[in-house]
Image (cartoon, rainbow, N blue to C red; front, side, top):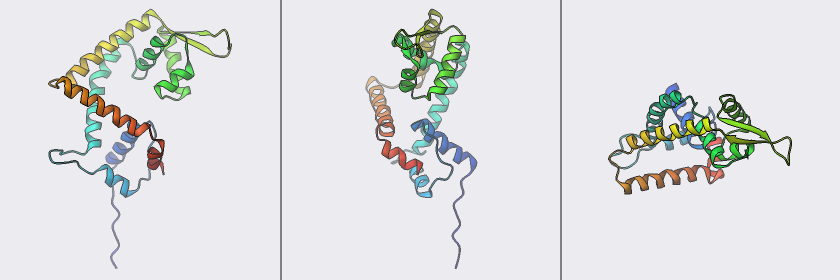
Length: 196
């Protein structure tokens, strides 16, 4: 009786699957993945779709990051700081737990990023009157200036990415991204299937 050969996947493939699951769900992907799940990930779409969805998402993400990262470095910000600055600007005297919840980052990680922002003079921390253990966060003028530069960089890269897209196509693309995000984050039971 012939033994069935087990499918093997290269390290590059494993890293791609792990990265995509973490990028889309903010959850680590287990190292042991059922063959059925992997086959689902590799199903191609209709005619004209030469690459599977996960590779297209990965390519766009990588290209977007490669275009944006050098510009962020020129401003003096790291990749995790702008979205925190944006929230602190729009929610004056907010607390660390609120920032962590909104940005979907662990409190410990949020605390380290905020400490760096305070050190660089982009954010200030003050004690609250009602709870001496909690800190309120406020953006400084330097933080607002850095954030404004970051927004301009994002708009520039966004225009490059969506070049030759009509207004209707842009609205549809935004809607599809929003739906995809809700599908992955709105129903935790579906995401839990990836973890078992």
